[in-house]
Length: 479
Image (cartoon, rainbow, N blue to C red; front, side):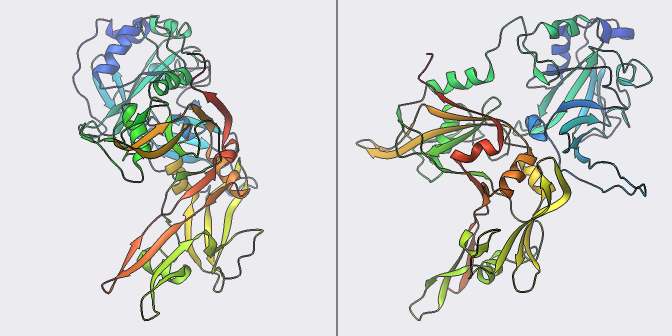
């Protein structure tokens, strides 16, 4: 990453440099950002209190911005000695560069400030340390209180084109043609970050885009396959994760090694069903983070499984040659599991908008009271913010016919829309979202081999607990 003084030449845009931001039209904005590498362009119409001092409201939860390269969340408790300290603020780094007709300028202190108690996510630090920031339009003492300015921005991928590396952005004045264009866009939502629709085209809403794509693949027996990120194809592909990779491949998504939304703004989840003609409950994996706290850190996973799991296999002499660590080895609140050696606790949680950012999900040794393994809220948030704001749960069946293996996707799709990390913690506290491990240690030729499956899951019938809106749609309708 270049230093704070980074600047690169760009194709010149024919506007008056002294006040280019007051005369730029939407095509000039598009040209500047696309020349800088933006793959998509978004806009936030700014209010009177959106400036360098009061920050810029960007959303209600970091997962609203999963299409951006969000960094690892951090939290430092206030050192204030006042009777009532300020509310918690979680900071999330965001690599950002400002763009103007002359070049790009790194803004090294740009970050998102997440206030769980509201909840709100605000853009902050975007002027500090930048060689040529939009101080005239964003400075609190200048035009930073002018309503209807517009902040345009877009994500840029790295040199390999594999992952999003940084964001480029620019600001235009309220009277500029570009700002006036925004209010008339079909995709504009006041108060929200909105995708920019160009050339007066009425973009289909996000649900319709998904429906149109899925309609082309449902109720067809498909040979399982996967599309790698380099564009190569493996067909047939028959591993256990084949249905999910086939779904992504059919919608043009490369193998999803990098966390983030899969198709358009949707995360795709292939859900196994007994029948494609009705909705059946199924346990869904939300994410698979490893512990980042406790006795297990720095020790071989085999040691943890052998200490806290149960014997699941014996050799011919009657000695254990396999251990398994599952949910049955954990004593959960309100449930007694006599043989379990670990107690599960949620530390620092009150409700969805009131939790200690330094809290964690804990597994305590029942005998010693030691923290055996834990997941800090900040580490869990780092995973959560990348994936889950919009998810499409697509049913499938799998089988064989005369031509070999097939997977078939059904029309009864469930959509989860608008989530938050606080809702996940609330669902976990209520026992709807669960830690459901499947860690194994196997002895072979004198050596123990670990098999890790650290996962947090939820029943499909309970996903209303983690989304503000759930839609059950039938892709066959409204063709």
